[in-house]
Length: 150
Image 1 (cartoon, rainbow, N blue to C red):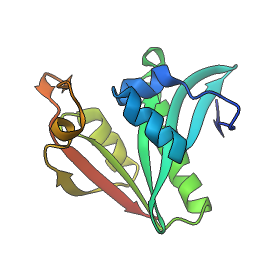
Image 2: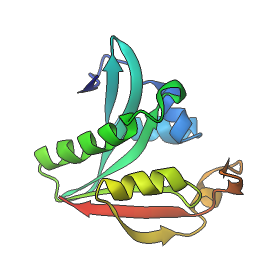
Image 3: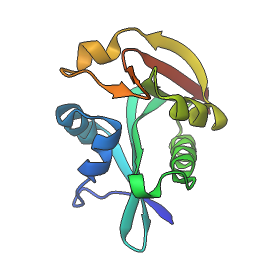
């Protein structure tokens, strides 16, 4: 598996990006401002993440997704670790990520990759999404914010 940055001529894998964020308009907006990286094996895209500069010396992973047929194989962890190393190489001092309050697997993954919880953005998913989102049997309401010093 190889992780590479998409060129301006390549189309981002919207089907995968929409697995992690169901809002096409939000995904389109941050794809325009960020850098999209894909994990490929034999020309098949297995996963994706987007790095977005947010403040001086700070970058955020705003989307990370793995094709449902390939989940549970460590690809998500490789994508997150690649994002961390890429941010470090680009000279950022802090990397951030956010996920829903019900995203139990993602919260565990991000902490295993060295992220620490920093704050809760209350009602984030109610303010920014027209339709309710449900995951793990509960409504996604709050955004759990995590960060890591590089």
